[in-house]
Image (tube, rainbow, N blue to C red; front, side):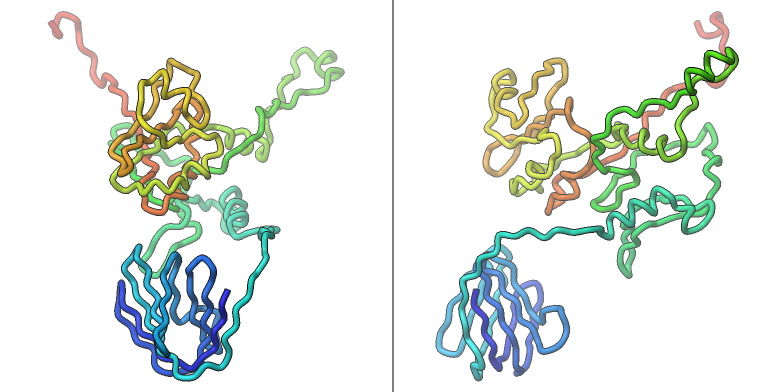
Length: 318
């Protein structure tokens, strides 16, 4: 890592064109090619560039170029105050004890803690002024649409889930029963006591989101394998195409249930195919949350079954 403290001017050309006048700045060059420019106050950098980049120096001019996005940062150094390089050794990982997401989950489970009758509709709802952590509405949960209401598919964008997608590893919760002594003494006693509110909620969280499907767009995929890394059940694999029987053996988790068809998508830039084993997919949406380009998306569907609304005699129908 290189740390440069200097009086300099900075010009940026890329998604916009900016110019920063002369001033004393702290410039950090990291080993992965990323760069940050800081002023004396504030935690946000005045300029930054993600790696990988190429850095070239010609006298007092430092030019940083990022080919992935065709961005250029030009630093004109007027006076060097400090210029040092360090070899840093840091393999530790950040450990968190409590996070904002945990607070969101707790409030979503018990919205009545905010206001009686409050219903959570969405997480991270996008607005012009920024996202809303929990978008709620105060309605009676007993109100339902009329039988003739037409429902259509709902596209669910990144970070706008209308369902709980936390992966639950809990086994089925046993229904509490009355004590044997009481049940044998009173034959009319209800043996199953049922779930209390907290246990019922935990049991419901074990359900898969069967009405929410993963949809993959090959044209948006950059094959970064982020979805493969985040999948908790290893159901996604990027691999060369082949016969189905042989392809099933090359998946990250071999697909042994031959009655379940594979989700195979071609059209990737490398010529490989994306294969997803629907038999083990949890519909948790982590692939869509992790995908940097939106190639994975979650789409909710509702199956509307046909129902007879009027009585028709057999003779009249012929």
